[in-house]
Image (cartoon, rainbow, N blue to C red; front, side):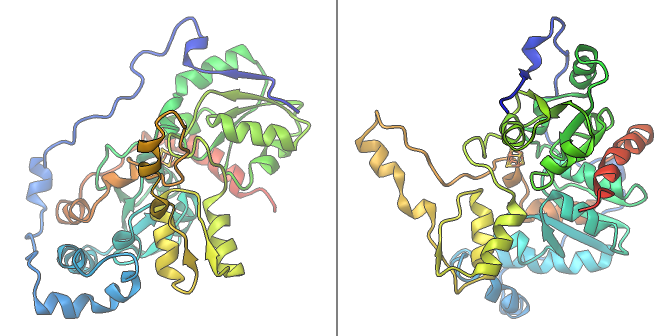
Length: 357
Ligand code: SF4
């Protein structure tokens, strides 16, 4: 069934003022300075080389020996401070390999990370991912301190819709239930009926037993869901700038490669994820889209549109080893959510988690 309607901010007479803008990274506050731990040495030395050799083994086929001496002192310092702070580091699949394989305790997609975080004993969670992921961890772990190394790590998809937009959609379509992808802010999650992921979206929509459902914010996922169900779908004009041309659940892709172990695979997704899979499965040859080097062909044929399979999420790449270290030294930047909003948002996430498979 085709999409029944598709709405964006410009379709309302009164656009929402103050749509989120990325703030400047703030300086270390006096309170953060007061609780800071001493900055560790960040020199490359034989001791650092020895202490991190087992970690370099994990990433040696994606990080060159020239790069490692710049990363290893941070890796060692982060792993030591993590113990001092009693913190756990969660890393999304799109984080770079030195983060994903060398300092993270838990890796996965955004929902896997938030769920896993509920099972750990640590009171401090450092979320290496984008802001809505840190919020989801906070929603499911309200009594834990959730830190994000750079709070400016946003998401084009999550910022395409606000809570006020959802309220306007509800006014326009009274009584129609609202489903939202987990890639939304806590404010938006608090306004919807139920969350979904890319792998359970159809099941979630059909679980509502409604003839029409508002599905947001990803218009491409909405189109996919509409093609798989008889439920009439009203979509939102949101899109991920990285995945605009590609769809597919990250968890499913990784599991498929793990299970099928093809000799060669081209993983058309965010590029750091392909690096992380390559580091984990060195026997699978990852045909790197970057090696196809479309730049040279593009330079020669400027009128040909080159669909570039290599995509890096610029927001994810705001998280770096120095910022993770900074987070552990100063316990910054803490993610806070109004408790009333967090409680409403938790309902929409838990409603999805409680759906039977
Ligand atoms: S890859 Fe897309 S959806 Fe994921 S964080 Fe980046 S912009 Fe958002």
